[in-house]
Amino acid sequence: MSSAVRTAGVSVHGVAIRAAIVDLDGTMVDTLGDFHATLNRMLPEFELPEVTRAQVEVRIGKGSEYLVAQNLRIFLSDAQADAVYPQAIERYQHHYAEVNGKHSNTFPGIAEGLQRLADAGLVLACITNKPTHYARELLRIKGLLHFFVAVNGGDAFPRKKPDPMPLIETCRQIGIAPAHTLMVGDSQNDALAAGGAGCPVVLATYGYNHGEPIRATPAAAYFDRLDQLPLQLPA
Image 1: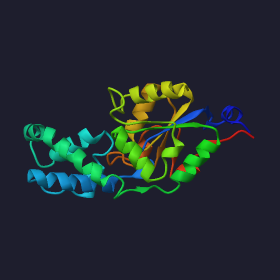
Image 2: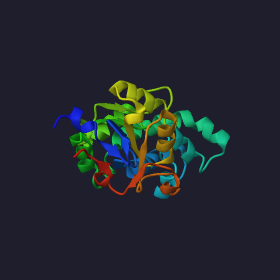
Image 3: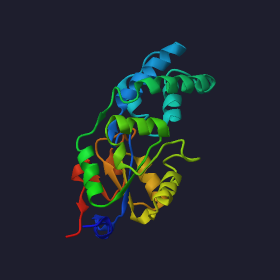
């Protein structure tokens, strides 16, 4: 059966979809270990203590700039953090290039779930707030890059999630309207971006949501594994 025929009947909770945009950190790959290791290489260079995994986890999701700034503020005043930040973000990116993918693992069911979406004829893209070249490299390392026709990081557009711009522009790239493009994410940021863009959204129960319960964020569906997403296929 051709993709054109199959996608005509693919839906999630009654919402017809032709494409899916999938978040990376916390949705496909558990990258907490990479962030934790990178920060603990960078912070001692500024004579600051190391951070715990718990301190890092609640600050993931808004890009490297936010992650570095907020972790500096654990130990420094706002003014001190602002003064250190330009050098700190440069050192963070330096270390991240060496760490990327070494302390992270793909969540269970991701490869199988992406294959299921692709087999249904959906066009797949990835949007993340991490820089595009790091995102593409991480997807390559984890054997997932081939699923996606587009990968857009936080540097691809003037604004990042939770702003809807990355979703709107990616929908334009792949030629499918937001109303028929499913956002697959793990956080309120993904839901806010999807809502602003007009995309339906489904959310992982296992990801990073700033320490808040994900089911408090409205979504079309929630999933424990991507390969168990309630996807309705044509008969």
